[in-house]
Image 1 (cartoon, rainbow, N blue to C red):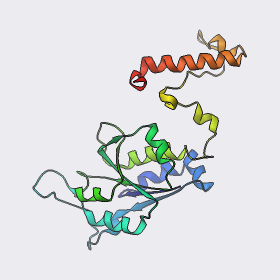
Image 2: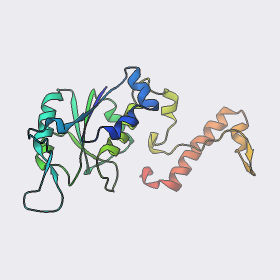
Image 3: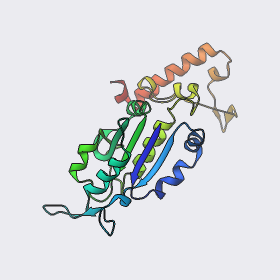
Image 4: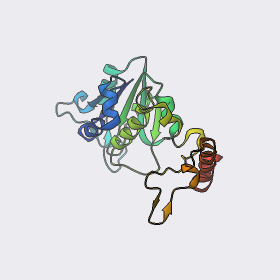
Length: 220
């Protein structure tokens, strides 16, 4: 998989992709991640990428030309272009799984008061990571990269993926480790019983109960 991130602040993502699972996925060749400063594609002498909005209003708006020029160069028939915006579909595990099957993802990180509306003509999907406002799209891009890359075959073990939250619209079961008792708090007896049939049954019951209590919306 190839992921291109169009951003005015590539340094804000560099540290993230050079750590832990993402770094290993890049090193092993399972994913290629490119951070592209679209300021380099501005046709203006001063490399300006924003301007005042027509009709007046607060703030600045990202101009068309840098984004159009950049996508003209990097976009292919396999590309899937995503605009990160509060107007987009709310991101979830289902979307992450669908994106993990793409060959080439392009993430557009906004800033200021947003994008010139005409840029949306180049976009395949608009995504929001929640109903709140961020200074820019880099945090959202990092979240999407993390959630997608870990789903690529071979990045992490299949067993780990199958037991995670949101599979089958359920939260994950409670987990414990040593010691078996700490400050009067004990690990459930079933987990130290050695009876794997009972353990699996308990875990399934706990997933349903936890989801019912904490995220009943997932059961609808």
